[in-house]
Image (cartoon, rainbow, N blue to C red; front, top):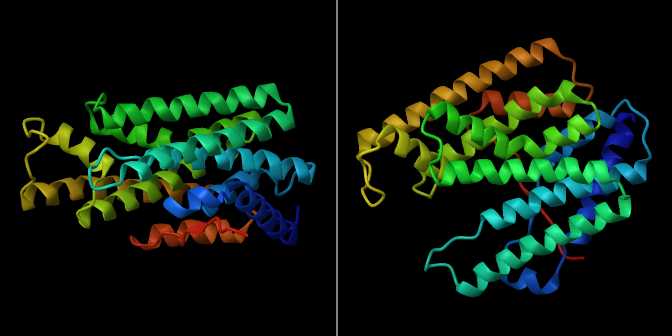
Length: 273
């Protein structure tokens, strides 16, 4: 696959996903699902120099993307009284709908081993989400390990299936850095952050859930997150020194994220039509 084919494949997968994700009724009530171009790039990376059936690539990668979209959609559901009940119910329904699409495509591919591998990745993500939300992890390192698993388990299983572990560490550290930056921004803006809630419970175990943090306590939590951000950036730079990424766009995106604490790629949403 040359660079021209790379962009063609990216475009084909996005169009395929946009078509599959469009649902006129759900569109009236909930936000369009986000098509994560960073994940898409990492999923395509192993196929850059290998010869595979292009139609199969579109279906397989679209399946992995749909799993992630379904998981992300379910994560948006809240118990807040400020969010309309119908909207919350439809968000759950949308996640189930996207999950159904993923099973339908997998059935068409007819690859039991791939289905089993991706199901294991989904199970890992759900287990580590629970570990974060229910504070089952009582160390900062444990929280960060769970967060990394949440962000990367699906693609890690995908890489293992295609025997492409070469890219695994790069992908894991990039997605972890991106999530850490996003959670830090949420916290600084006063929005709920599952990561900072977990860090707070480990760092200030005597605080009740209803107690507000002081300014100094908030600054301390931010400093903890910033230390991990700094460490992940160092790891990524070290990885970039040791490997050659065939697609310059991916390396540029990684370096942008490392250099700018506020850089996050613009979201792409599925549009109707």
